[in-house]
Image 1 (spheres, helix red, strand yellow):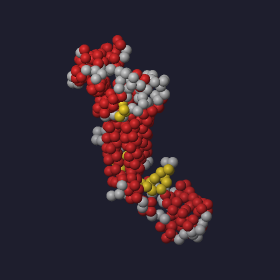
Image 2 (cartoon, helix red, strand yellow):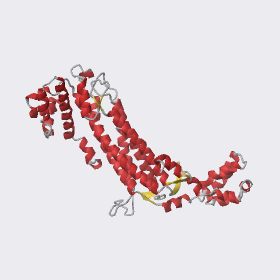
Image 3 (cartoon, helix red, strand yellow):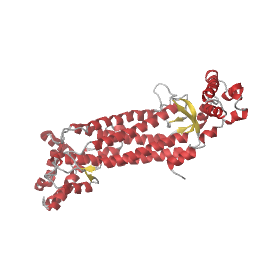
Image 4 (cartoon, one colour):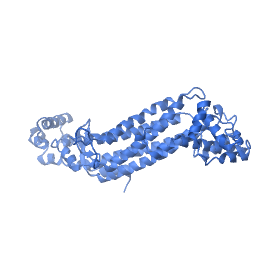
Length: 434
């Protein structure tokens, strides 16, 4: 994790102290279940819980691990220093993966909850800006070239719908990864009763893994990190849209430029889209974590630890980075400067070309073949591209066009409102009626 791109609440999930606290809770809840089954004395479970307020010494655990070369054993050794002789009943019938995998899933669930809240904040900002600019007409572009009119509100609505889908995906991914395995070596429950797993799962807010090996199946985690990658891709799509709109020749929207902010060390006039450029880079990193998560699915037999080093990196890095990116994008959308006058200027830059399809369709309605109609419209459109002519004037002066359409019929095809007549319908589909 890089502090520059970390927010405290998400970062704290991945701190060693948090991890050891979760390990303790897993072990303590397991002791409760074992005591209820009569496997260990009730007094042993009570003795373990007396350590609930202990501040585990991370440096001490690291010191032990350097000797024993095993992180869970190091933790259990340190725990015994507080619990005393009753510590011999801790971890009865369990294997390290029971603790590690269950803890990892607890951390991912907590991270997902923060990310869902992040998405809710972003959705609120997108919704507000969508309704604010529902009727702000701007040019739509395909291949980066002027196409037909849209509204800036529709751009925001499209982003809202995309992020709403991402929220649903993340809720599903959270459920996918919210499982617990306390099944012992190779997952057979030979030395521990399945009731222990059920108890720990309930206590930790998880569900029992239906069938584990010695690890929770990693297809669950692959889906989780792939979902984070999809969300990151959506962030990048919106960021690139803003970056294009902020280009000097376009300048239809712009990142907020705060008082005292500097855009360039060399050129004082610069106002650069640094936040959305940053988001593009962060999205690449989050996506990069999805592939190793997928490669973790294929482990040897019932267990190996080739996944372990990967997850120690991608767990914190992917969630912390995405948390930061979502919060940053929310800020960008919330403060985004929108310039309707520049949108109108760009829309009219090519003097009516954006209405070419309406003229094409009108000609076909009058009996002109589509091929001939296309030829007539295109030859007049090229005069606008190449010589800066006025599209409507050229159409009116074309005898073949006038043979099919009157001046009034041509003029009617240049009505801007025609292109926005279904905006309310689209908004109702995205945001619901009313």
